[in-house]
Length: 111
Image (cartoon, rainbow, N blue to C red; front, side, top):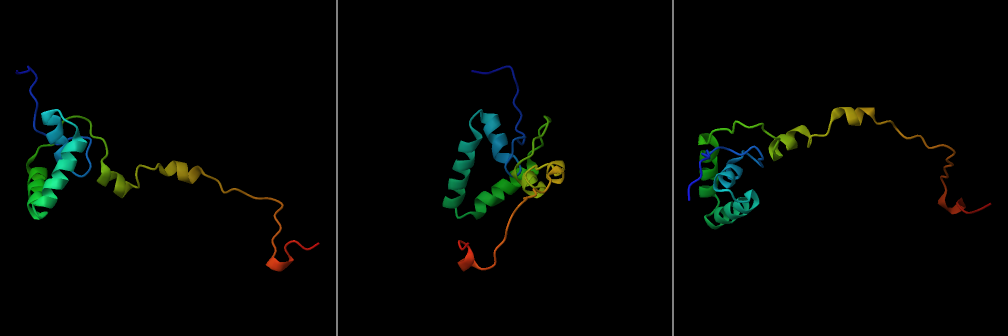
């Protein structure tokens, strides 16, 4: 059963690190989370290094997708999880009025 649309083996735009596993999931039309879980399990079973080397090779060899790219985990991590700077700068400090401070906790309820 062939379809007329040609799928390319490219990195995914909805990425966690470099988009390799998301690209594999897009190519085979399956859920990216399941591909990521299977990759982690296989990497742990194979003593970590083969999985890391295969992932690094695929990240280097796979072409980027031509679609608009969304920010992934690493981009969000280094930019502060996309918190706009304007929002934090526009916040004003709350002022509390009519506050009485007491230094001695024993005289707190004395009149």
